[in-house]
Image 1 (cartoon, rainbow, N blue to C red):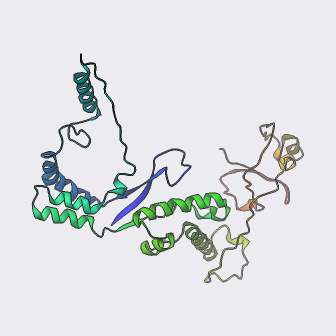
Image 2 (spheres, helix red, strand yellow):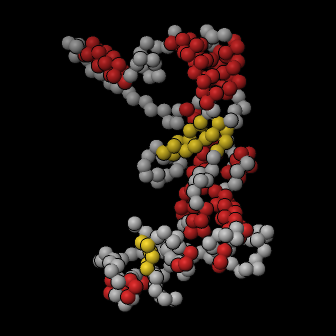
Image 3 (tube, helix red, strand yellow):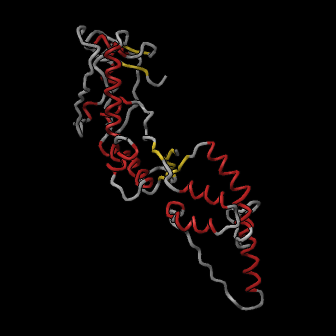
Length: 296
């Protein structure tokens, strides 16, 4: 069983179909077995028939050797001959993804290696099982409903892309059924429900004081969150130093002045009592604004 994870090829990632490469992580035992088979049998067999001008993936060889060989042959061909050299460079797109395993098996069978090793390699290429670990599975579940739609869709495309390589030709929904996964959106939703119900059942949790005392803590409660695509944020909604001077408990707090304030994210709470008590907090009387030092 191999884990397939996306590896970033280009930063920042703007196109998940081009800038991510799915990598199959095989178990350590399989890696040890692969290395033994390659070093003992496959490696020597391939090196005995490979072209001497091949430098890639050859022991004790490098791109430097390639350049030396190329320059040497170009010099021989053009030295006092009046000839010119033309070079054609080829780059194979997604080489490893597009390898035909049937052709690979035929080539392996033609090598001078024991039949048992050939069968072992062929068996390794047939009916291989892989699984895709959900992207961002370890992230905090609380941001799910605050995640913008376009980011949610971008994250979903990452998993969709990986699954399409694991099982090409299948629909996204069918691939989810094959690997027994849910969509990332559904997974985050389930994590939110789980977190909420954990809080409900924990009577010592600091959030519990805001729930009704007679709530049934042995019952699951669905999480309902209201969201909006945009917020009518105007310049008058931004706090400034002149506004802060109206509140004595906020004295000494300074906000940097900006020429054209713009808001892209709104964060706030009407329950300052649930904020971590280790943070530096300026509180006034009930209903007055409060400040939290989040920069340390």
